[in-house]
Length: 275
Image (cartoon, rainbow, N blue to C red):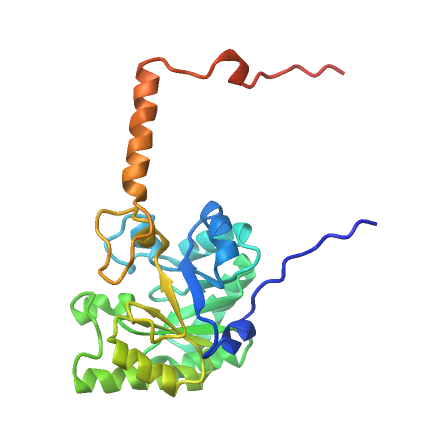
């Protein structure tokens, strides 16, 4: 009997154990082909509700549904074999009660096979995180700038810019960690605040627009690859995919109009199989 080597999947415990160690490499993923490319390089792939804006063209994440997250989570799980895959819980799927959050998180995990879920976690969410963690749902928290709260906050604004905000963000972090989250995403805070939070909590912090003071970083993959004309100022563009794709498609269109097609020996032919 032949033996097959199976790639070991990174777990929530593995991520938690990286506190203060080698920085965590994290990116977003929304489909199987991209997940397959990212998987060998990343510790964590997040199926973010940013999919609503990045893939579906929505103005915010508010219109993202549970079914959308499950569909994209299933696709990413087909492509990723090594990285821990976490799926965002969309707006309205966890706020009303811990029981609602658990039921929807359990549905996400059972239907996608993902290893964790992520929720945007103000101090109000501590009870919900504890409820889920006690019932074997690995949870990642998300503090600071919380996209699902952007409408209430008046837009996508950095957090912790004054003493009151700073204290609130620290409270969010401490409450999230103490409630049982195994990692915390910190978005849109200054380096000194990110460093203070990282020192205070016992779980890894993963920054997005929060400097290298965190235990790792996550970016929206399409921002990092230069898919869009505009990129957040904290993102380093490692490619200019929009321009390269535009040039490739323009060349394809020119070839078609010029009737430049593969030669006969490059064309696949179908052979009839008898009997």
